[in-house]
Length: 288
Image: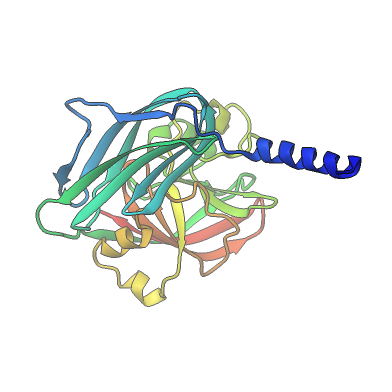
């Protein structure tokens, strides 16, 4: 074999060795902590009941790089990291399915996994709750002096930044404009640039940042206005975790959302005017 061929073979062997999947290390450990107020095994619950889990993860030979939750095979939460381990509390809601299989999973960089599955059986009959409709809610962007841009479902209230700073426990939605994301509805818990809401009342100075999550949906005007119970709200949001921002909003958009205190809703964009000193008008239906 010539020198060139030998060099190529050596190089290919080195590449193959570098790409070889690690199989001899120790996988991570995942467990559900037992306790009086948390779920650690198969159980039953009524539709809409809160399901609380305490998840404990310890890495094996390598740091954990992925943490996921699946509900009936559909991805609900997907987090990337590089962690030696963690412990956190997860709050989920029991849906209308007769049986829900909830799988908690972690993985290290060599695809070594650990997982725990909990089966939750529906208790009682499926019932749907009442809803309330709000029309013509106007929110102002960050530089709109005449119109507040922070919104609370409690009492259908709109606040300015200064007012919202003193009512942090109430704020579910906010509106702003940013190049790239354009007209955006989010919540204080979203990853919002510190340059958007500035000054002593800016989000960087908030101590309580509630998070609402959003999913874009297709919906007819008739279905929206004719909604009389929360079945549409719950089924539109589904089981997977939504995004923290509803971006690039234009008239006619529909978004399903879930607030931090597990309240479902849908909003419809009626109109959008201007940019960082502009306004947005939405109609909204939410659980009573």
